[in-house]
Every structure is written in C-alpha cells, then in structure tokens.
Picture 1: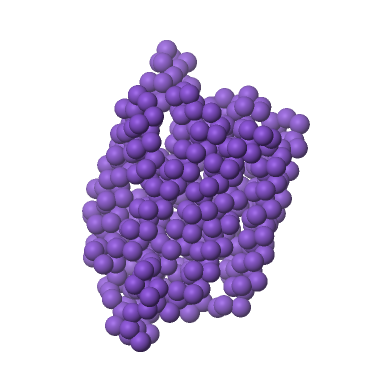
Picture 2: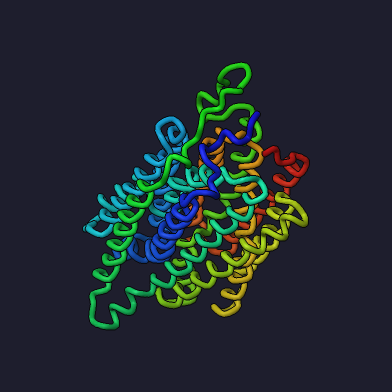
Length: 412
C-alpha cells in the first residue's frame, strides 16, 4: 500500500499545519477556562456534586454522538467542512451557556457535545487525521507540538478562569462575570469557524484504491479496514482509561478542592494553569524519550506513577501537599497523549486515520460517559474511594496496553 495516499500534498509544505495548531490552541484555551468554571457556574444554578457529575456525563454523551458522526463522515464529505461544523457547535454552546436562565439551555449546551469533557472529540479525530499526513519521521514531533500548544493554551485558559473573581472585586455581579466568560467561549468558536474554512484541499484524504477483498463490515460501520481489530482493541482499553480519568475530571477536582480545602476560583485557576504548563512541557519531553524506549513504553511507564500520585491526594492533610501531588501527576499524566496519537497514525493506513482517531476518541468518550456521574456519587460519600478507584483502573489499563501492543510495530 502506498502510504503517500493520505494527502494530496506533503502537509509540512503547506500553511495548514499552522492553522491546525492555531485551532487546537484556541479550542484548548476555551476548554481551559470552561473546565474550571463550569462546575462553579452550575453550582450557582443549584447543582450539587451528583447533578454536576450527571451534567458532565450528559456532555460526554453528546460528544460521543457528534464525534462518531463527524469522524465517520469526514473523509466522505470533507474534513474541512466537518471541522467548521464542529466550530459552529462550539459557538452555539457558548451562546447557550451565556444566556441560560435555568437548566433547559444548560442541558441543551451539554447535548450538543461541544463543552468539556465531551467537546474535545468533535475536533481531535479530524485534526489528528490531518496531522497524520506528515512523514513518519516528523509525526511524533508534530503530535508533541500539537499537545504542547494545547496544554499551554489550556494553562492560559485556566488562568483566565480567575477573571470572574477580578471582575467581582471591581463591583461586577459574579453571575454576570461568569456570563462574560461563556460569551468569550462563543467568540472563540466563531474565530475557529473562519480558520477551519481557510484550510486548503491538502488536508483532505484521497481514497485508497488498494484495499483487497472489498469493504469489511468494520469499514462499513467505523470506516476502518484491515486495522479494525487493533483499533477496536485500543478503543476498548481507552474506555477504561477514560473512566478512571473521568472519576476525577477537572470540574470534579475543582469542586472537591473548593469544598474540602476552601480554595477560591482564583487559586484553582492558578493551580490548573500550573498543571497544564507542566503537561505541555512533558509532551515535548516525550519525544526524545519515545525515540529511546519506544512509543508504547513511553505511554505506559510514565502513566503509572501519575496514577500513584493521584491515589495519594485524599490523604494529604492540607491544600499544599495535595497541590504538590497534583502538579507532580501533571508532569507525567499527559506524556501518553502524543505517543498514543503517533502510534495510532503509524499502525493504520493513511485513508483510515480519521476513522481510527474517531473510533479511539469515541472509546475514550464512552469511558468518560459514566465517570463523572460515578465520581460525583463517590465524592459525596468520601474522596478516598474515588481517588483509589480512579488510579487503580488507570494502572490496570496501562499494564494491559503494554501487554497487548508492545510487540505491534509501526507500519507507516
């Protein structure tokens, strides 16, 4: 199979990479401040921990549906069109959140699937398929930069989440300050619509005419051909990893730290900005490490210590030690992101990359679906069980991933 069939032009010779990285940065900035503020915003509408968890699960469910549709249709109807449509939904979610007076519009924003934690999947599958068009030697570095900019932008967004406190200190009603941030989310979405529409035809997939044996059932459903078994296995594993993560998703961590230690929105904004900065740095560090020990080894053996740090958080007697553990976790927990992205792009055929990224993203979103609801329930009962369950599930995922994929080498 000719691996060059995934794009019309070498992606590194166009301006599209810069546009895609800009899209990633803008989107992540919005997710950064909304992830910190969303639970606090919902609390002002009378939501408690259980209701917040259920809301986040609903947002994930919306993200699963749209991600499946978008990743399946991207290579059929155009990656640029699908990416622009995702940006439109992002904009609409911000508008709904900004004007909501009660639960109806809040729930509609969640169903659309463009708010954390489900919203990331609207974009990532298509973006990763486009960036996968880079030559294999450059792919890991591009995905690391993609992750670095995303985490850096989320850090800036987390810092921006302190703006409502600043506005309130200058006499603004706090709810009005929250609504300003929701409006900013919509403005970011409009900007992304323009950028996505400016991408060139080089990002579109060229159909692969070398498939043998016709279209398989897996390709009919998921858009995958001979790589379907590997991707279904990986997507299944991602369900468990995501479930563990979603038990202590950022919004729930914000709520717990606020309730347990009395941290304000400003302090929480600084904390989660710090975690994103460390995560961004770690993604760049993953590049030389992956060259030395391999993609799968890097993903697994950096991930396990981060889960151990997480499990220790609820035993900390004060906010300071808990924050140190969360920062230490942040330095390791995202190193698997660029390595997994690069690995997935390397073991599937070029014309399957959008579908493969979509299936694995859908697996991750499926795991996120129940996690916040379960996490909200267990946090209401006591934090130790929540943190231990999350860390234990993630460690089991890492060991299984290593066992299944350490002997499956990259193909493209």
